[in-house]
Image (tube, rainbow, N blue to C red; front, side, top):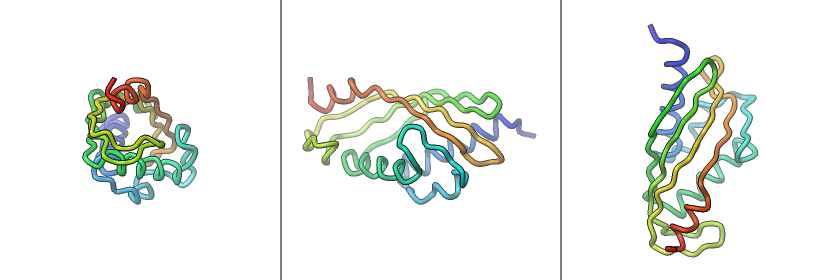
Length: 133
């Protein structure tokens, strides 16, 4: 039998794969609670808008979970996003440069749904890689 932590880690891993890697943006209803709090992108819709921006700018993007830890209702994730800058990204025209950037995510899970998310990304490194310097 799975522990609650194992179930939560599996749920978050499945969400990352479906939402970020397969770009199934409408999967939010399957994974996120009705009272979901988005602390990095303002709302569920803000999360979907940001993901669409990433997809447009880096259509070959791939998120790799490097480490995932469950503790009670929290799931902490360290992952890497890799891709090629092929579309507009916050005003930056495509450069063809590759990115390889570390992200940190914290999720809270209750009753089999993600109820809260906050995230951090190394934007300084990302912009240096996009610009090629």
